[in-house]
Image: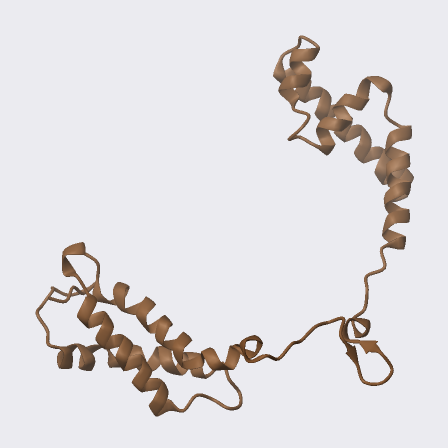
Length: 194
């Protein structure tokens, strides 16, 4: 018994299942094989591997689960793709070692030397300048509000409200007021927007 998604379930032999689902098998096989520009897997060999998985899906399919046959077939086809293409990805299992810090050639140049490193020095200067502007414009009473703006996970509005015995809404208004104040300060002093 084979359950379909868009038609009634029916009893089918393997030959009928093969005829019905072979287009799906071929599509999955070709999609996987198209990933390789060169040295593709021989289609006859690939198809044979996929048909073995179709047979296994047919043999182990249990309609009492209520799942469509294609739901069971698809993972089997993915396993077939893996089995047919595994050798292309298994260089590490063949004793070939590739390392970024292994010396290449006679001049001891490493592979990692060829990659550029990110220079964050200007970013750090801008960040420290922005931080200095913000902290110079925050009063002692606003430091806790700033902590809420910077890290809401650790410093919550509710904890601030409880500490100063005010409502959560009042604490939130103070946070919003500081945020607006800092937006103006950053725009005029850091971004130099008039």
